[in-house]
Image 1 (tube, helix red, strand yellow):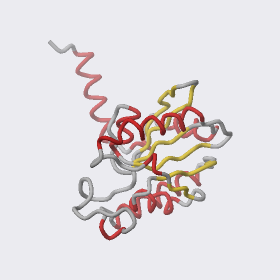
Image 2 (spheres, one colour):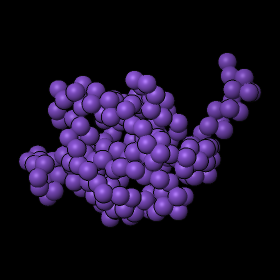
Image 3 (cartoon, helix red, strand yellow):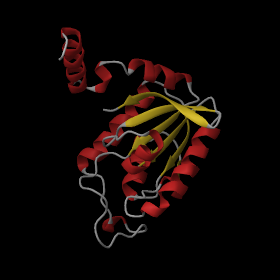
Length: 188
């Protein structure tokens, strides 16, 4: 049986879930990012569909699922938010998939370094453990006054942080000795 307190709390969670993320509790996440030393796990911006089409080739963007016009605008807006808030970005790494690379480049927060340990394993489930382990090692080793931005895919972030993310959403984590702690989430 639901109590009035439980019902009120549930209603509040539902209402907050309908508000843009900038309208509530993310202010502390932005402040933590301004202080630096964190890692941002970001899912690429909006690229409609699931997975990649048959005939996918890593070296040919035309064979991949790519950002839509809305996704390109989303990536630019997210980058603008980081610059307006003076969030220090020390390094930007991206999956080699075109939608992730384009997201990182459109954010315009620094030189983008493509790296295989952020590549999607949606179709290559056998790569999950190795890529997740390498990403975890990179995250936990991060030590810098600036933040590390990792642009990757939903499956990678779910494997690392245990929760799904929507297009353009970010999970911000604090590296710890051999582990990391979730600081918060950001989305547009």
